[in-house]
Structures are given as C-alpha cells and as structure tokens.
Image (cartoon, rainbow over all chains, first blue to last red; front, side):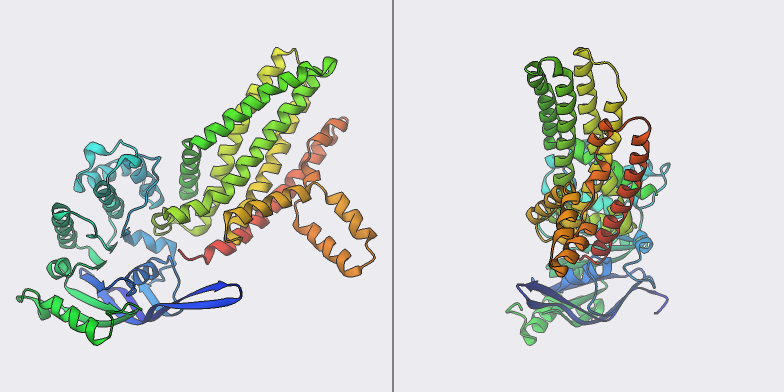
Length: 254
Length: 255
C-alpha cells in the first residue's frame, strides 16, 4: 500500500446472497472495484440508484464483508474495530435514538469513540457549534426536523476528529441553504486536512468540491475522473457522467 | 470496558424511557395488589397466598420483559438502522452484544426490584413475619431470567423473525421445567434413536429445576445455599454458551 493512500480497494467484489426455501438468489452489489484515495483528497462516488455506491461505503465501514478482494483503511482491515476511530461516518438518513436528546446522543457516541471524559464536553460544544445546533441540543431527537437530524448526523461524524470522513449521499434532500452549508463544511473540513469520501447523485456538488470522481455503473467502477478534466467547463462533468452511463448501458438499472 | 459500560447505560435509559416498560411494571404492581383479593378468600392461608402469588407475578413479568426485551434488543436496532452508527465506531461487536445483554438484564432487575419492594410492603401490611424465603427466592429468579434473556438473545440472532424467536424461547422455557419428565420418557423409549435424540435435546434446553426457588421452601437448613451455588454455576455456564453462540452469529452478520 502506498503510504499516502488512506483508503485502498483492490479487486473488491460484493455479491449478496439470499436464501429462501432452499433457493439462493444472488445480486451483485459491487464487482472488481479497484481504486485508492490519498490523504487530504476529496473523492466523490457518482452513480444512479442501485449502482453500488452504498455497498462500497458499507464495505469500507465493515458493515458488510467483501466476497472477494481486499480493502485497507489506513493499512488495516475495515473490520478492525480500533481502526474505526479514524473514520467519521454520516449515513444517508441519520438514524438516532428518539428517546435521547442531541447532547446525550453526542455524549454516547463520544464515549464509545474513545474520547476521554474530560475532553468530551468541549468536543460536544465544538461539534454543536460547527453544525449550528447549540440552541436545540437539549430537545429529544423525536422533535427534530430532517434538516436538524442531518446536522446532528454531521456533528456525530466530526465529534471525535477523525482524519477520514465517509458521507453517504450527504446532500440528498437538503434545501438550497442546506446544500451550501454542507458544501462549505466539506471544503472547510478538507482545508483542515480531512480526507473526504462521499457518494452522491448530485453532479454539480461533486464538481464543486471533489478532486476526483468515480463513476459507478451496475456495480462496476467504470471511470475515475480528475478535477482537471472538468475544471473550467460548466457541465463538463455531467457530460462525462452521462456518456459513461450511456456507453455502459447503465440507464436501465441492473 | 468503558464502551461496554456505555452500552449498558444507554440500554438501561432506552428501556426505562420506553412507555411499554412502565406499563409492564404498573401492570405487575396491579397484579401483585390483586393478590390481596385472592388472599382475602384464603382464610388463614392469606399471607401464604399473597406471598406465593406475588412471587409468581414478579417472575412472570420478569420473564415477559426478558423474552420481549431480548428478542427485540438487536432486531429493533437493525430495523431502525441505529446500529449503523454504533458498529462504525471503535466498538467491537462483542462489546456491543455484551453491553446490550447486561443493560437489558439491569432494567429487568430494576423492574423486579420495584415489584419486590411493593410486594414486601403489602406483606408487612398484612402482618407477615420476616422470613428468609422471600429474599432467597429473588436470587433464584434472577438466575432464571438471566438464562432466558441469553437464550432469547441467541434465538433473535439465529431466527429470521421475532415471532419465531419468541416461540422458540417460550418453548425452551416450558420444556426447561420438564427435564425430569423428558428424561423419564427417554429412558422408557424402546426406540434407541428417539431415546438418544431426547437425551441430546435435554442437554440443549435449560434445566430450570436447578434454579427453581420453590424447591427452596421445601428444603431445610443450609441446603438452599448449595442449590443456589449449583444453580448459579449452571446459569453462568448456560448464559456463557448462549452469548458465545450469539456472538458467533453476530460477528458475521451484515447490515
């Protein structure tokens, strides 16, 4: 592994197998995925619904296991629990315990992330300040709107100051102001040295923040595009994306 | 260790803020209070009836909480996807499972403590003279509840639906009380294969007779301590086996 590579996937495949009444149904989640992300990079994964973006993120997080191939996060297996201290994860829809307040949720995640008790209150304050949720932090989560839940989702992802951030569809469902805030946050985190890997449907957002973009079609990573290939030409990344999807017959989702 | 304690703490909060948890405790307290009615018609056996019914209700409601709580303990987190944000933390799956198990046990024990204290108050009001039998029965109940919680947790990870997990757990609970009868049937069986099958099955089901506090009442003197030692050793090993198997299933589970 290259010492600068923070994340590396080598010929990784994931086949989902579901057995029912003695019959096994196989669905391909990801096939022959090879790419790496360097320290300090913002890498976006683009693709249609069912292209395999979330599968890749779950593989990197160790929530599912690869059928074949190899994944390394900072030189270690994603299944290594201690290595997860290095990752901040924001799911597409943040799912929280509705019976807890935002502050209690962050305190809980902070403790299981190994943050020392004396540092925890300050870290929680910092995270709440960054996502601008200080005034609502003592309300139970069941009273939160989708946008507020997304903010707390972000707060828990950055709480333990991990070097690698994994965001699954971070801009889906956000209003224009929310989009701008998320974009600014991604840029700011990256400026502070964070490596960011996210999946998205939004080509325009990826165009604005990514250094490189991977395009997935039917479980395969068909193309990796660098910023210099789309920079300076509005709509260029969209054209590359559409051409790649069309040429690989990805319009009909497999 | 700190992560296990955090999971225990949040599981306890989760259970105690659940309306259903409060409803079960209240219902249990009402049932214990209802034992006064049965006591009233029992003549000079009034206190005995209140004592027996109260203990039975406490155990029954502890059992209901254990089965439903353990079966939904992990499944609910998988369905609500709250488990994503836990397992993507530096939290070994074993710590999560153990924390959830002990967190649930703690919440059940607290609810049983509420029922026990209320029961005790009723007994004193009725002029009960303090005796060890009441206090001896509680540790035995805790052993049974621990075993059934571990078993339900294993079934919840083994089975694909919560209904089948509940059915399996209740079945094992019932059969666990009929170990002697099953053993008798196995010895009487003329078919060697079915006899062997029954005996093998006997090893799988929990032997509830070793944790049965009712036997304590019939034992004189120090015998209950021996029974408790044997029962707690058995319960510890049975829980350990269930948790070990549950962990084997959970460690390769995909989300």
